[in-house]
Image (tube, rainbow, N blue to C red):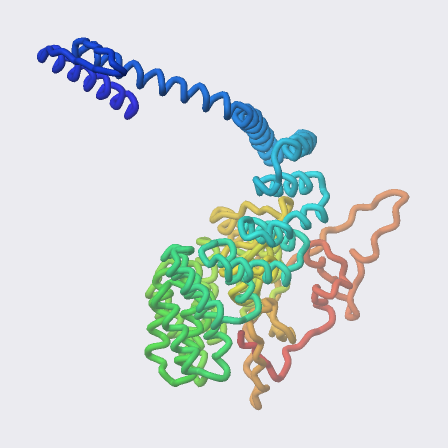
Length: 550
């Protein structure tokens, strides 16, 4: 466009010049070597311009002839380069698509058309071709050559880092990432990989420093940086909790300022404050976190905030926690556990059944089994709740990369990724998928078998639920009165019908030592089943009763 405007301006200038001469006619006389030459001014100007044009044309022709060899060479070189770039582009597309044959063919063609010194992308094409062909050693050598070249250093280090991660050489991957972050701190993958490796090694101070640098360089956005910094501060607070309570408290509170809903930070801050005898502030932090999302760990720590509390005091604290988040399964389960410890068995059963209707999970049915064991001791009813627990969905847990942990961890033990653990239901196989809803929980409660026989229950030496601590109360000097038996209709064995050619089953007609008839076992199990009590054995209520506090 600019050239067209310049051409138009030149033509316009010549036109104006000739018009100006035409308006001012005159004669031009030239005496040269004794000869007089006369002509009009317009003719003289035309001859002068024609002469200048002829000279320019002659100069252009001479220059073209003189430079023609170079021009021809440059033409063929440009044509060859264009063909090489076309082959390079086709090869990179083929390598990205996984077409090893075409990528190898384009690599050889590119090598013949373009020099690798002029185009570093040839090294990348060769490395990618070696990768899709499975020649990992050749690809690694190509990446090493690229890492030594300042122009392709970041690309080579990136390839070496990915290869080290593929082989599981985490230390080599860490070194490549740190080298790339040192040379180019603006690279997100290098900064984040170095951050993960430092976190995996427990170098919390270095990780926090690198995270601040990455945030200033806009490698990580503000929201993600705040979350990662909160996780790092929580991890450092957990390591300081035993030796430096004040430092653990400060780090945990700083983490809560960045992410107020981070449960591990709230738990760590509360534990540090409880050790400093600051019960009010610690419980306030737990209550604030509980209002956002009830968590079993928060409930457990809140109920046991004071070490000298009785079981009744812990029940009061559990009911206060339930008032903050009513009609919630986790809150009801916490009240049920505290009521079981306080021997408020009716309240424990009511809250546990309500929690099962809201969220029928494995732990709530195990809790009902413990309540049943403490209340009636009926093995049939206990087995009923245990069977429901086996069929129920698993409880949420701290899960990362397909593995679960009983406690929160800042780094995944599988991938080494920072902030990988989430509170969610753990993965399970397809065959273990359970569709357990409120109607099934109601059916389980309705189908609870009646108490067959009342007896004083001797607690097992270990609790059914691994997460519930077992505390055995010392035997009392005076025995408690045995509970009154519940009157139920006695079940009589049906009279066997005579069957020809078949001997009668002795077990069905076996009599006790005193001649009385032995009733049928539970659920058709044989009488020698250890879970079936033998009424003929003459069990007596023990003189001393021990109780288990959960």
